[in-house]
Length: 374
Image (cartoon, rainbow, N blue to C red; front, side):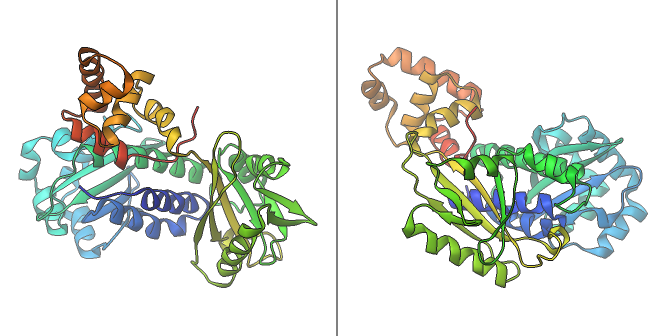
């Protein structure tokens, strides 16, 4: 299994969110996701009556193979698309389960997928558009191990982000950020979006950004129309990230503002250049800052309950296992009987789709995303 630490997961999600506002960034974003899963191939593809090979965003695209697909393999491809279209929007699946063992006898797999080292994948239908759909797919190669339960669970979370990204992109319709429709779409995000220039002069914030900046006890604020971090020790680091993003195309940076608020939360910031396509009039080198509250380790209980629909008792037991304790040690620590612990464990297995304690532990560690707790 790939060791998907929190920084790698967060970085991949931040790139996808960037791409929602500028779809030209999507190739780089999905390439980062491919590395996250150690995949041989990744694709965000469009399937429908008017689809074209160029509609697919993928790594290492082969124009000759794509032309061959549309010239010779369309009957197989149509059957493939029809099967995928039966999957509910937002649900993830494994190739071998959806298509069955005989799929590898098809010309589509033998003559198009296998030559591209696509020997086992995870995918999700993320968006329906007027009878067509977008599909998100990650594949492993011939010499790689199949994706395990923890990686599949993490893929489900990332596919959920991809669904929101494609939906937002569709809603924006390519308009620039100053257009009212784009503003309304950004206001629906739980993320704070703030735009400043190289000198930290404030230009724009969505609703969540306004709320963040208006909080007198918050980690960020405005002073003389300029963005500033209330902790002096963090102001220079934030300014350095903004200057670098303004000066260098593609320069992105992250930092964590230690707030020490009553809930023990920190603020995660992603600082990135604002695409020229979305620049405000006369502001060619602005920078976009995406901010979200980051729950500390103690927030893992709520996150585990949210992700897998666990009860509080089940989540506590699962987190105990993820911390390295045995089932006996967890039962002793939590003051419950072993029969009760085994009952909780059985329910955790069922809800997470795992069969072993080690799989539960790996699943929670790999899928530990900075979720907004509801």
